[in-house]
Image (cartoon, rainbow, N blue to C red; front, side, top):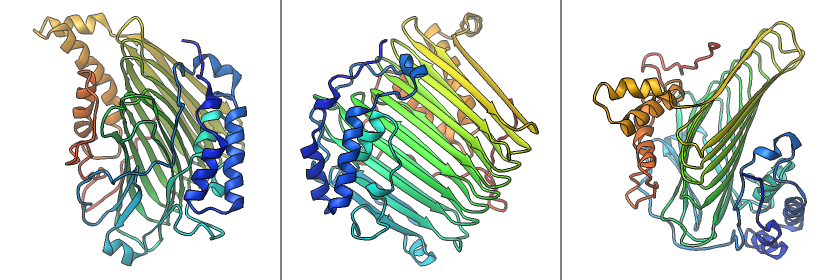
Length: 462
């Protein structure tokens, strides 16, 4: 598959960017920043690194007619769970709920547009990082949803946040930015869930997600993304984090839906003794493609990081995963590991795995593991000899292959929670949102016990 993008200059106009800025009540400075991002969108390549331009798999993308100013009724959702934070992004805007006991504890949510005149508004365009590629520039120019979540040091009980994005209109464009500040000693579990109410009857949709997490000393955060929009959605994710001393972070990703998806994770392990797990799985069928990039930069001493990515691809689906571990000179006693593996179920499927280690310090241990392979025929034969039909045997092997990631997640029972959606995708079904919220994840708990709620992070090198 060659990398090509259909007429990007026709997707959106400068006039639409100005209209979006006016609808949010922004001043001239923020409006100009949007227009600058739009110019970058027109000028920048889809992939800034020439080494990877042959692996992008972004053919047949045509976002002509994107509308980031659409208005409509709120999508029906169930009542928020007690004791939690819940945010919903849809065509009607962003609505937030914070449980009264969390408000009393000092947990605060500020939405985009709450105070655009403030020098530090809730995630405004002014605080978005300089784009390096076409799609990140587009996300900045079209930013129309967002919030700042602050959990102060004084909060001792775990805080659960459910973040729902619901796509419901043709040519819809939702660009969401999340800024999360986890205070010292806090425990935070965030789920980002992306669904569509129906398949877009014509045209493609855009979902852009930018997440920035700042962990205080000894803070522990789990951020789970369930990516399950309709198969005409083009998505771009950018997630970044900075760790404090003794903090722990787990990025979890389950890619099940969408047409074309680019995901970029960049984590800076700054605080001494901080730990990061980046766990990702993808299932691709039909013409889907996933392009994932993980960067772990070790800056502090005695930091531990691992990136584990697994994908299963069939039909003509495409996958690419590239992991980069960089260990700076001061980062002595670092442990770091990259694992990237893919399974191909058909001759037309393809995946590329590219692990990279950049080691500038001697007193470290860093390893990598990678492979791309078809289903093992001996495993299939073994299951068939036990009376299991070939399609079911292949499916069992594929599910077991992906469970390697889910079993290492610091969320209790995540494998059982994700498998119904994985089963539907395996059966060629989409995952539409229903009015009763049947697709939303149930309440989640981190692994551990009530008496000792230590969040399990597996940092052994494999």
